[in-house]
Image 1 (cartoon, rainbow, N blue to C red):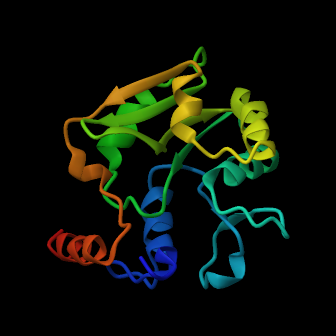
Image 2: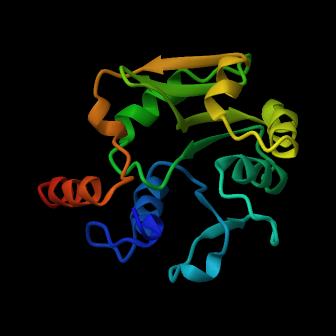
Length: 177
């Protein structure tokens, strides 16, 4: 993207992060923002900051930190750059939740969407080992654990904003909603 996509303006919000926080707060009683530094955000929210001094820019660290901060056995995780994952997709994942699995993850024809799903605390030791080994391949972790993959036909709901053209397209879509 060339800049911090979490801070890009989106819809009627100053940042994509604030947009995601606002809409997810309508679906969940507790919403947390996993980040490196909460001082870059200028709105009230529950932030979970990664440990200072670690130069790791991978979701693995965020998962470890979240499990250490939160008391819940399971939580729903969604990347900030997936603004079109809606209530229908989230409900389908929640309905597929099962305490006998380590994770419940969205999947489309493009493949698994590891940053859209429910993660169990049982994965914490595996995440810690991944950090120790500097291995941040969530897909490999999910393939090698007891994961339920929930298939979605609508791949557009899982569009990621990784490039400027994808962001511009998302702005057009959200302006018509």
